[in-house]
Length: 417
Ligand SMILES: Cc1ncc(COP(=O)(O)O)c(C=O)c1O
Image 1 (cartoon, helix red, strand yellow):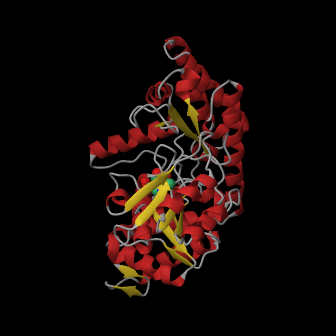
Image 2: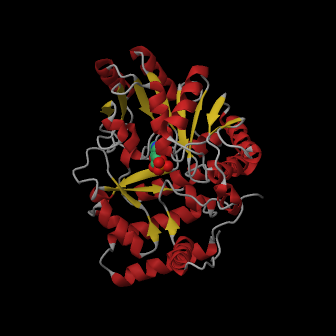
Image 3: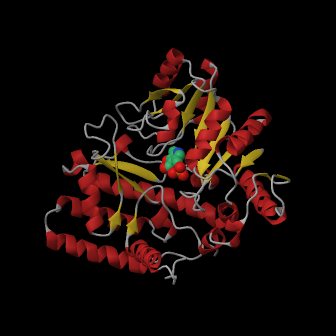
């Protein structure tokens, strides 16, 4: 909850209360984070954590599941309604396990998968070498082109050479609209399945401000805690009967054991929020804010990867724009209570631990009520901090401005009304 807690365990109490202070007093720009409502957190911390129920509603290996069955069925029905899909599995513990189960449902071990490289904005689970997806499958990656954009001709060419069993689209750091129809045409042309991982843009799709992959992807995976603003976790959706059966078997017993009913309840409560008119407004505002934020950096002469944004995030090439690495930019901003993450840029010459970019996202601060005006102000603060990184008194003044903003835009307990 967004108030201090009291525990017998003082060490954990302190850590949580300090984290509360940090969340309140920092501007959160990590694109994968958000502020779940107190109702979401209440059910996530509820007695549902006590219950075991391996299996699915009506088909459990344990007794006493009549209440958790209701919770899981509500989560499934609400999710189906949000995205207009036939089948939904709400049990994945995370986006990563959702991807593991989804890939296994479509590709035999050692089959070929093709996803975007990490440095272009893909995710570890899309075929990265040290991840399960790069170890248990033959993985190949496509990149963005020199403009930082998806180039569908290049992707088709590569797909024709590789003949993958599965193509993965949907990313962690790509700021432009994804053309799911084109991806499906490519998949069809080479006889591959198409998986859309909408972990980042799910809330935007739900709000109708990014096209939906439902008509085109054989399988859709997502997290529930980024733009969807719910409890942490993963989900898998499909419209195809045989795939749905395989997905269910790969989630349990394939990759997971007992479902986390407290998390599933947190997802269900968040999905109900997603279905409300206020969520559509929220999604719209995230994108309006993101465009205004990126534009302001460009007005200051900074370079944005891909030249701008259509969604909730973008990456600034800080090496070129401010002559600092992503790692240093992130730690300078941390000194003035702004949290961002360092991020590789296409063809980055720096290592993933250093990077040349920082990724900024607007989902969390839009939840706190920021509009274009505040994001423009914030762009100026960040620009000034990176240009005056060694000037302690300027940084001190900027931190004061940040604290003023966090005070005027407190974390909301509820998004109803
Ligand atoms: C595109 C994408 N897929 C999957 C995931 C994995 O989600 P999780 O961290 O819940 O495992 C992420 C997380 O950042 C992501 O960005």
